[in-house]
Amino acid sequence: MTVSASIAVGSHVWVEDSEEAWLDGEVVEVNGEEIKVVCTSGKTVVASVSNAYPKDPEAPPDGVDDMTKLAYLHEPGVLQNLRSRYDKNEIYTYTGNILIAVNPFQRLPHLYNNNMMEHYKGIALGELSPHPFAIADAAYRQMINEGISQSILVSGESGAGKTESTKMLMHYLAFMGGRAAGEGRSVEQQVLESTPVLEAFGNAKTLRNNNSSRFGKFVELQFNDRGKISGAAIRTYLLERSRVCQVSDPERNYHCFYMLCAAPAEDIEKYKVGNPRMFHYLNQSNCYELDGVDDSKEYLSTRRAMDVVGIIVAAILHLGNIEFAKVSDSDASQPKDDQSQFHLKTAAELLMCNERSLEDSLCKRVIVTRDETITKSLDPDAAAVSRDAFAKIVYSRLFDWLVC
Ligand SMILES: Nc1ncnc2c1ncn2[C@@H]1O[C@H](COP(=O)(O)OP(=O)(O)OP(=O)(O)O)[C@@H](O)[C@H]1O
Image 1 (tube, rainbow, N blue to C red):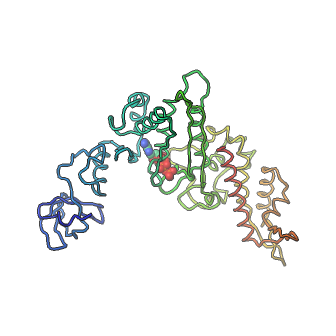
Image 2 (spheres, rainbow, N blue to C red):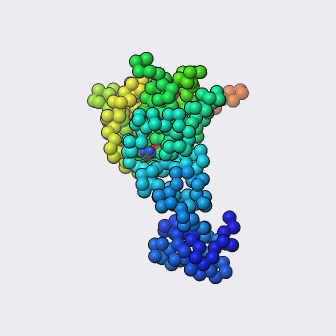
């Protein structure tokens, strides 16, 4: 952008600041490539002309709901507009037909109730305040009117609010295309109800987000020619497998492991689990609990899924506790002690496989060539790597199976 020509004494500008990101002010001196700016904050700064951006002194103080209305669509202009609106609890802003959402980090239930959905029904984009319902409505109407499939792309950095925004979009589409009450459990209900299970197995606490989705998701809703939902499919991509075996402080492994450890007594006994601190795959980080989340309640809410796959989740925890030691006078390895033998036995029982075969699969590598099959013993380090690889593959298959 060539702004230098338009900057003179008296111009209103934005200049970059290492602490505040951007400062606005008035130019009081121009010395070749350098300008002196008296900022609204009271600070006086000297900046290079190439780092200054013009500011619209007539921009409305509360911001504009569509940023294409801004006189200058540059970084400080966009950030200032989003901030002015955020300060008034307006978390949504358009840029043309793109919706920008700023995470409010607080519940704003008045924005998402049924009245709001009624409100946005059939209204052209831009006529009402920016909202995910308006985006969903525009897509729905375009699909009905033109008979063409529509997609809505939700993107942003971790913790930005993609999952929450996607839920709003799905709620609206379910509202528009759902069945009348009393017609039984509908497809859209099933899709919305699948969220807690997907989150239990695919979400974890990270530095940025206590409930971060560690996978990509493509949700497809199919509609019939009357605009009613007739089917749905969820495809997931690239689950972060390494988290199953490696967790850095203060993050957590996938929620389901902690939920299983907080199960009712009869399940704790069945799976031979208990305190999460005793499992290697969980105790690499000191974070076990999440503020405002009761893992035992979460366990009960996903009990149907846990009854089916709890066995595998528990087996993975036991696998992680198998340590290996060298067999004397050889390169081979074996479970290190009675503790490791116990976890191997438990994992084998839960996976319903032969204990000896499981041990061999961890401590040996089988190489099949055209002429022969070679079995090579692994040293303790290699056996631990093979154990982790096995745990990761079992977990990711489990996740894929749950999604299907
Ligand atoms: N519209 C909203 N209203 C209230 N809270 C929100 C909203 N959007 C986000 N949040 C809060 O921010 C948290 C993080 O949001 P979310 O999980 O949607 O982020 P994300 O972009 O999907 O992150 P990741 O990529 O890590 O999965 C939510 O758990 C919620 O507490």
